Every structure is written in structure tokens, then in C-alpha cells.
Length: 180
Image (cartoon, rainbow, N blue to C red; front, top):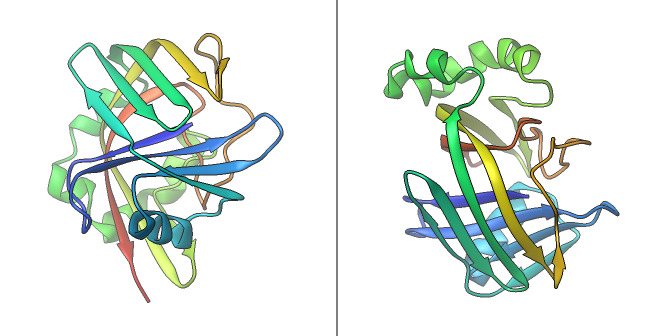
């Protein structure tokens, strides 16, 4: 799962969830038709589920609730590369020109992860990460099934041009999408 807890967006504050099931089905859980249309034009899904999605992040953990989905987790210390990421000024860290330059380096340091790429439908997308923290524990239920303990992400998710880090993380990221 990739949970988006958007503090600012053209749609205001919202949360959404991208899920890839063990059989490869890609599901978007979104709070409105407008958000679902925008996100599913940017990423690839087999199914879209609409309904209230709420998320809360605190210093020590996080919760998320949505249709057929309940998650709570405990956040730990810095994830790999957190110290390095925090050395980059936030304006630079989210600048598309910078993200294009560092994309090859990011892809080698964190396999499957990209900072710049084609998001489909003529869109270009950029991920500017400023902070990463480990997820130490999670309790998640999806469609009535407990998902088990925190484990490495394998294989990579297939929603767009980039996956998520293989080590479960809470990531502070600025996403920029250039529309055609």
C-alpha cells in the first residue's frame, strides 16, 4: 500500500490509498470522483473504490480508515538516507530541475524509486523527499483480512513510473505533476 495524506493539493486536504493485492490487482481508494479521476489519470489502477478516507499522523504513529480498510502504525527512527535528505534545502529538494538531475542517483541508491518520470497521459511527475522515518509496526485490515507484520515491499508496486522503498517508511514528499 501507498497511502497519500495530502496536506495541500488543488483538491484541498485529503487522503487516498493505492493498493496492490497479492494477486496483482491495483486498487485506488479515493474520497471523491474528482480526486479518483485525477489520480487514476496519473497512475494505473484496475479498480477504483470511492468513500471516506481519513488519516492522522502524529510524532509516534499514524492511522488510516477507508472503505474496507483500517490501518494503525508505529513510526520509528530515521530511515536510510534521512540525514542526507535533511541536508538539502526544501525549496531545492522539490525543484523539478534538481529532481531530474538526481533521479539516476536516487534510482541506484533505492532500487525501484525514481524522483522524475513520465506519469502517463502526457504528464510529468516529480517526487521531492525531505524526510523518511521507519515504520516499526503496523496493524492493517483490508477487506476483512489481517495483513500481518511489517515486511519488505517485494515485488515493487506498479501504479506509475516509480515504486516505493522496499523498507516500509513514512515519507515527507512534495509531488509535482506537470500537466500537458
